[in-house]
Image (tube, rainbow, N blue to C red):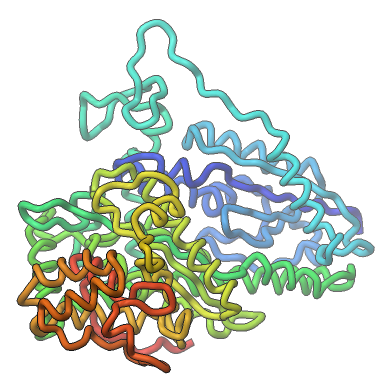
Length: 544
């Protein structure tokens, strides 16, 4: 059998392309255009016949068994597309056709590519030195050596695009006096927006049909007469790269090439299905919570705010995914739903990924709650930093599972996450926050868990604490001053003890001092009171 060529394509600058604008319409359009690379556009770029069906399904047509077949898409995910073709020229032709499509329909979006030819019968695809490892190394070199493309500067008298600063190529179809660059015009194209909405509705539960899908941050949720906050939630699977590397090491011989392709494809599809299932069930749980017979007062307030913003007689769904389809997801929602929806997504991902090839998978999430018109790119970067913090905490503790971290940017964001926490969340006694927290299990330090956090939030939201809001605010500021100040506070306000954790452990002294293991037990719960709305219990599990 003649040599085959392995081609890998990587989409560059996805984060900047999607999240670089403060207009949700542009973020939505950009996300859809990025998705097109690994779906419709790659299908049309592949030489006929190939194995990618018109509905996006991967058909079973092994290239080595079908002489008439010209290309086989092996897998796609994380912005990567890997294709097996008959020759290097065929691989390069795929890149040329896809690049032309990007120039025409998604200006500003770029790809990098690499090709490796190998003997199918004698050389391995997998293994540490196989064709797959070599083409990924070649891709990294190509990205390091590439010349960044320079946008065409304006000539003579030009208008600047409000979003990108590039020369305007036209005007916004919805705001006639707003000049936009070619890149931004592609993102706000109504056909792109409609296609993005169609794709999302196909993924989400049918009950979403009762809602309008938001195309403006202001429609995600706003309290009448008050400041509007949104939550930017980023969730990412734990150790997926390591899992792929371990899989490749299991197929170091040429005789295992087809088995490696099937295993790699199976893992990729399983991860994609797990992420999509988790997202769909997260939305379903949210919608079911909206129709419970006796909603919590906090949920009643949220529902009233949702219903006051309607489009075509339908309230806006306070939730909009921007990146979804693999092990990572980014969505925006009403600021009061961010923590709870992130928690639900992690729960559902764990359940959907419990039978993944190679064992169960977990994920971590970061939640940045910001004012609706705060620079969106910075809010997204913060959510990614928070996700990394949650993963780092798990690694440091040597724990398996899911974890989440968050930040409420009530007064804006200044500096990196480490700088923010050093400036705003350190006191003489130690760290003010219990974050990050584990989703399940004993928690970091045996107490820093989601269960503990919610238990404390509900303690301050109920009983006599809720009736004396000034007392709660005073306690929050007193906790900064340390243990002695907290003891004096309890005496002044006749508080016998502060609320208990679900599990006290060896000592309950924290109920007198407010501090445990160099961390404040109560600060995070008090800070979250305005940004936490509980939702209903979990749904019955779907049949496999």
